[in-house]
Length: 225
Image (tube, rainbow, N blue to C red):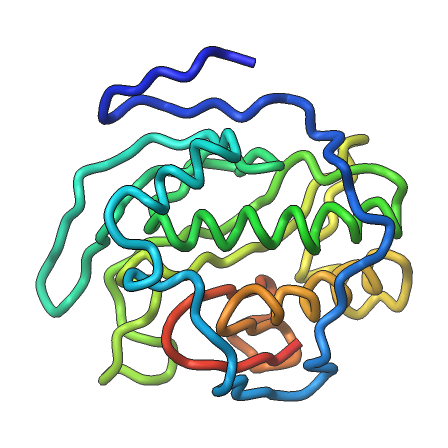
């Protein structure tokens, strides 16, 4: 493991010991195949719950690989507080993602509690890389030009595929409905994500999500797994 360097703008390296103490049981959400407002659930990943340096301190404790960025804002409400560029958590990202620290923390929780245990259950190996379409993007919500997307504040990420340790790539677009082990893995991972993220959208939601899974930690509650 590379030594941790503290100055602002430095990178916190993920140890390569991906063989974490993975739980034998897969975390499966109670959201089933329908929608769920989850209005009664708390919000552990919002700015109020992670004030000051608390969030970044938690990332350091978990040895997550990231580069801290200066917070920024743009026109129309776009921008990120507690901004960073995420490189890897328990799995490498296919490319660095710009997002807020609370989302990076949620993604790490998802990987540890849901993704890696599911990969062990279905394939007997870990996920080494997460392929994604991006996180931060200053744009309106899909299908609703009057409301900003959670992407516009670094609170959402779109995941297209999971790459296993042996190089197998499980794609949302081609494997969601193949009725095999890959499909069952994707369904279990998506359902489990509903217990971590506030909104989870996949191919069962609408035509716009046929090739990726949308995870966000915004104020709304919706599970379409």
